Image (cartoon, rainbow over all chains, first blue to last red):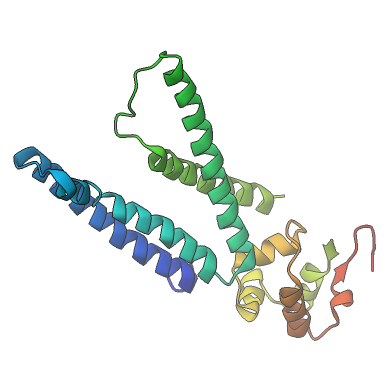
Length: 139
Length: 67
């Protein structure tokens, strides 16, 4: 692992794993709380927002990766991956909103918010980078 | 921008990973620079020159320039 991953990437993976564990715990815990004994008022706001915090943590983690990675080429690849994710997410959300505006699809997102599509885009960007690297390595 | 990294590596019997370790970057970075897909920053270019013990202009060449 030490040769394959840079220190920045190791930090990123460690932080990402921590936030993912926290998200998994919180999404089930908060779901249970709202099913069993729904809080009200400001407490409801506070409890409902808890699962969002680890996702914000993941955004911070990606920011730290870009700040800590000393390999400039790899940093450029991560930036490209993030831009692909942003373009993918904005495209999906823009099309979806117009479909909703003209009532072609029902309102709401069924739990699939902007962050979900951004992470899907991040995965797509990673695949794009890997394929581009492989194709160029074979040239 | 063209460069002579591959030739200079071969003269020293270094693999891409050997050079990457000397530069403190990934093997993918060396591969990308070597193939001209990525132009290194000035600090990295200076480090590359230092590792080979050559001036920058003996390693990196403008497009169309040959040596």
